[in-house]
Length: 111
Length: 208
Image (cartoon, rainbow over all chains, first blue to last red; front, side, top):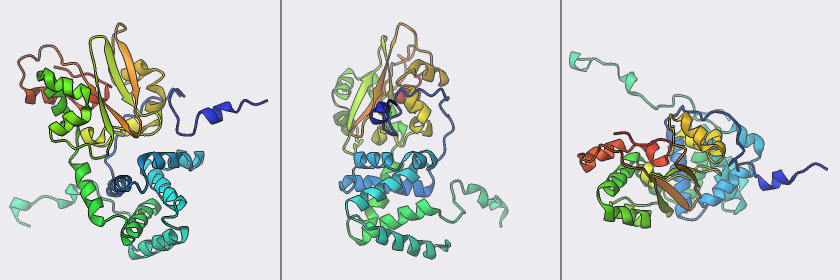
């Protein structure tokens, strides 16, 4: 029988001790303006306990391995926070969809 | 253009995104605008938090460490409660986390990591460097800390225990590095200059 226990013991983000021998990447980048705004927004959500830090962190585990591997750091956080807001019924998928289109059109981004 | 002002302004645009905003950037704007419309948050709160983030840098941590080096009673308070000592120096712990300060000694060297995500003492050090959030750092720091330290050019003697401290969303760590020898004559301000961000994460040690 295949031992699946590691899947339970090690959630997607639980990297501690997994020990891939890749060197630590030393390159650093300055935050893009939207990344800083995203960080500030998520802090404000935490202050009001609308979505707290641990909920957001857990949310980044629920996006699946493919998204976890392909999205950048702040892309993951905003997707996670959005999913938390949907799960809590604070926002609906329709609302986000409509607003996303409205903002895109306002900024001249093709929809 | 006058001769006194004959330089190219385009060279000043350091972090500017000329491209149209992408999907995720628009998602951030959408969520923010919806929550503001609902009056769950205000635009001013987000603006203010950007200011707070901009006001935090490793220089704050350097001040705490330098003060602890010259004032044993402050050091005792810092180790007792990082939050209280930081507030005493006028540094607010704005994110409601517990700050635990770990003292390096002749026999113990501390290193901090967040294996689950990127928990970091942001009120004291600002935002973490990219490598702190990287998978190799997070996965390897707890298994082979000495090998990781060597990648940062840091060799800790075999007679010194390397202690790795895993942060959580509520508990954040800051390393109080050892004061280098030969710094007895330095002022508090001069000492603070020796204390870099990486010494307070524990990937390196201050050098006189």
